[in-house]
Length: 176
Picture 1 (cartoon, rainbow, N blue to C red):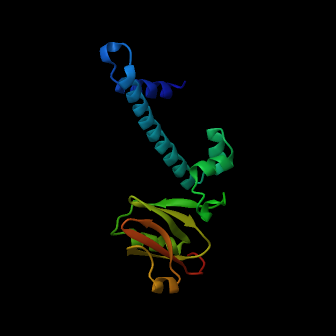
Picture 2: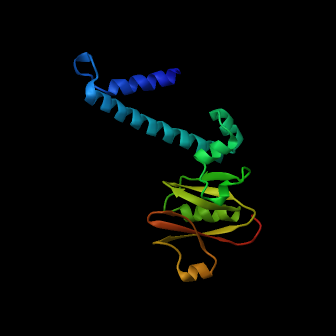
Picture 3: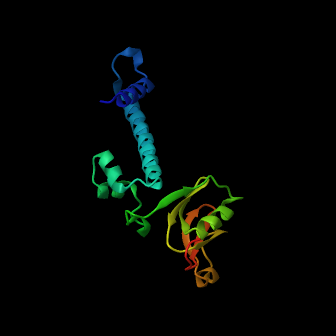
């Protein structure tokens, strides 16, 4: 086991009180399971964030898979969002836009859109962007989604981040 693994194990065991310093007992075993489960969820979240950061920094799925001892496809299936078509191509360029607030994000999205970037995910103070060969417009609305008029004007839902819905529209122009 690695020294990090040893430290995590000791921290989990230290978090479980053992009555009288002896046997763990029924409640102790359950507490150990609960603490281990919590630690595993935290570590998985850290690993996911590390992979997302590596991808936004241009690291390929092949390199990530090799680092984790799995194939490119396995890494992409485990950490990529396979429900979106924009992650199917390993050469797709992503980045995070942020930090942005509700006050300045639309101006930042407008600049990014002119450069060929559009949002595919919104989170706390940031947007995940994908690069394309055309300029994009961004629109933020409150509610469930675009109205019939928005849809008729070519707007589509890029992502939802309560209470906002972010719409995008392809302008068909080359990026600036």
